[in-house]
Length: 241
Ligand code: CA
Image (cartoon, rainbow, N blue to C red):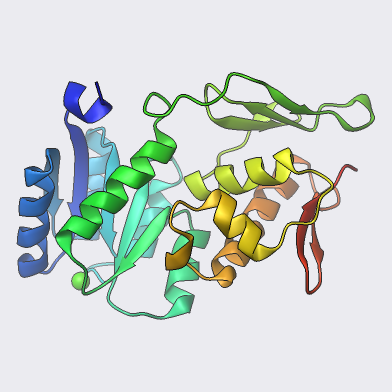
């Protein structure tokens, strides 16, 4: 039995255009999601503070603040998956959205069923009970000191014993690099292995996630040298230090 069948997945939809919101709410409810709809960023943050949601669908262009600002505030306390709805097809928007902790984005106009499918795909990646990972521990112990450790059951990666707060994409990307440590992977290989729908994103997206991953690793390692190295014209490699 799936998670959705056992309990309705609670989705918060933040969208100020009534026509878009109505069709989306209808489509999501048909797909057995429980949807709460708000029109502004302020209302969204109030809802998030008071209730627990499994998923946030967040319009970038809101009347009182941008969806990016909402996400940034949200990420201070929560790792709930976020799907951005963006009106513009600008790559800068997409990358900014991913850098501040979004899990994916969809450009308007979109089909409501596409959104439901994306939400399910992201939840499959981020909900451990849906697809139990292999129970083998993957550890990485350079020069005797444990730097990165994967906890497959919790789908977490620890750095020097501290749990890294990663988005779904950052987690998958770091796991792929960890599983292939010492091996250079091209952007195409990373897209192929770490994204469920590699055709929908560009290699700039990989670069954006690598950037946020590096920042988080640097923070966890108190400024030590980057573990993820760039091989110009080739790709990325995770190295021991
Ligand atoms: Ca809007």
